[in-house]
Image (cartoon, rainbow, N blue to C red; front, top):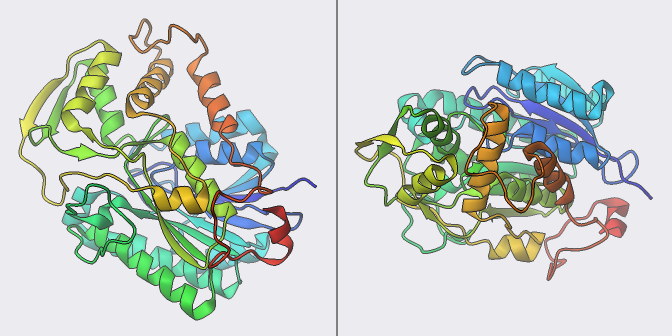
Amino acid sequence: MGFSLKIILTLFPDPSYPDHIYVCLPFFPHFTPFLLLSPPVPPSLLSDHLLTRGDSVVILDEVNDYYDPKLKDDNISYLRSTHGDDAFTFVKGDICDEALLEKIFVDHKVSHVCHLAARAGVRPSIDDPQVYIHSNIRGTTALLSASAKHCVKNFVYASSSSVYGGSKSTFFSEEEAVDMPVSPYAASKKACELLSHTFSHLYNLPCTGLRFFTVFGERGRPDMAPYKFIDRISNGAPMQQFGDGSSSRDYTYISDIVNGVVRSIDRPYKYQVFNLGKGSGTSLKEFISIVEKYTGKKANKTILPDQPGDVPRTCASTEKARTLLGYDAKVPFDEGIRRTILWYNEKNEIKNCNAVMVSNKMSTRKRGREEEIGMVVEKKSKMAPNVSMDNLMIPGNLAATY
């Protein structure tokens, strides 16, 4: 029996990212989940994956002008050209609009929510915390309320590695206490985790939070360091380096994140939080060096003091996600940057780059698409290794499909 997913993509009111998406996914005929994509996950990647496996998609986006709206238009055009105009529906709107959410839940008979939309950014949250309360906390509460009212089968949402604050642990574990955030953004994400636990407890709403660790890759946010560094170093433009270069991040390539998101959607739990990261860190100094290697150019950088709210390092423990989701990041940082530069060069018609592959002449678009589609999550007839049935919630006859 084939499985069709109904997907709602939302490009949310978060102006810091072009692609916040709702995606709806049914696991069996007439089973309609609802997925909301956020800043870390470009919609054209996750939705491409879901559309390829037969799901329908509805995109909800506020389409603000934080940066050029053409970036969003290009992603929508990509989906239309790849899958056809009838494969998904686009709706302009805001997840804080409760009447709009009600209409979507009713019209599309939503059964699953993957809520990844948010106001992103640590530093901007210090300057304007109120907007983070509105977009992240109010928006999440609106979606949780609608989900509980309509008895959805699974609510998957984006948290952040920022909740760990200045943790001194070698690997950040989901078992750590995260009650000392160092920015309004991190505090808003922790609040979302608490709210989801409350709704899970009160309404038996299955909730899974995903703590993303610095996502990067093709079609990523233009305000994120990987894109900014590649763009500025490629063009010889001045760039800023905050700190001495020793700060470290667990950068996670987009295909690994999409894999983890889909695995979470396909495996409902009563309440869980998972780290989605690579499990190893890269220093800022090494990061810039790798970009220089693949662009063939030296960075024109200015060294500035560390920024308030930034944490010195992040590194995910992924053991829990590996055990309960079957998640395992595959793409090393060096390779992820190379692929991202290949995409950037193709997009901007830059030739003769050091990142061009010698052993594989496949174009960036073909390679990226084959990997995004090829990395499709294992069939739902297979359970993740070592998954305990305790705390795993499988609605109705969905149990037979794992």
